[in-house]
Amino acid sequence: MPSPPLLEVRDLRVRFDLPAGPVEAVAGMSFDVAAGETVAVVGESGSGKSVASLAVLGLLGAGRIAGGSVGWRGEDLVGASAERMRALRGAEIAMVFQNPMSSLDPLFTVGDQIGEALRAHGPVSRAQARARAVDLLRDVGIPDPHRRVRAYPHELSGGQQQRVVIAIALACSPALLIADEPTTALDVTVEAQVLRLMRDLQRDRGTALLFITHDMGVVAEMADRVVVMYAGKVVEQGPVEEVLRTPRNPYTRALLDSIPTRAVPRDRPMPAIAGAVPHPTEMPPGCRFHPRCPSATDRCGADEPALVELGPGRASRCWLHVEPVAARAAEVSGVR
Image (tube, rainbow, N blue to C red; front, top):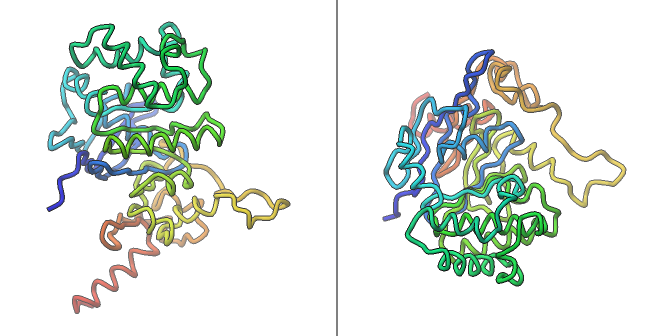
């Protein structure tokens, strides 16, 4: 019998109360993450990916969870006390943020910052924390860790800073690591190194990984399952090989078509999705993607489709797929 998921998010709704009125940045998101599994959440900027990940850790700032649940090993974290969330962050669920320069404190050495994460969750002396920091820097591939443990963030390259952030996140051996676009500011060579590092550490430690990205190429390289988001809603999800091989939602297909390939002649414009993700205060009626969708019909602009199961672990939110699936189900059951 399979073990229950570590993380179970159900119908998550995140609201921000703005002067113009409340807006939902995440509107009914559901997904699971099992032990040792990598789940990627993908979508353009403004889709709600980072907000959803921050909601898991209770780091929404001006936002608030307006509905749904965030289950962690059977415990609902929605409404949990500040003390409980502080004890959870770092020890059981840790996060790697987008920009290491804004995540690291320029006034403290990287060794002190790793040690702070260790001392926050247990009785660890400064000497023990320093020795553990050296080990962690070695684990994440920082050369000469005994010297680098005394370095300040500005003395390290961008790739090394990101490795330090990963070391801090892994300091207390969390069961789940949330990585929020951890390679955004890195060049492609360093990006490949950091992704390889995260895969190796995950394999060696058995850590579950929730990977937030806008890059479908990274999804193909890193994930077991993928959740595709658009304008605050899940539009498709399923095993990564199935979703990438046979995307069932026009938005997923558009993301894949936007990946540059060698087959595209150099004299042609780079493939891209026309338009932009709508602002949360200006959501269109019907399907939220229909103003940019080449397959949209009149119904798409009038009625919002539901997220419909297409098979084991597979779902899509699109009228083009809802009706055929419903027809097949009716045919099998003998109901017309």
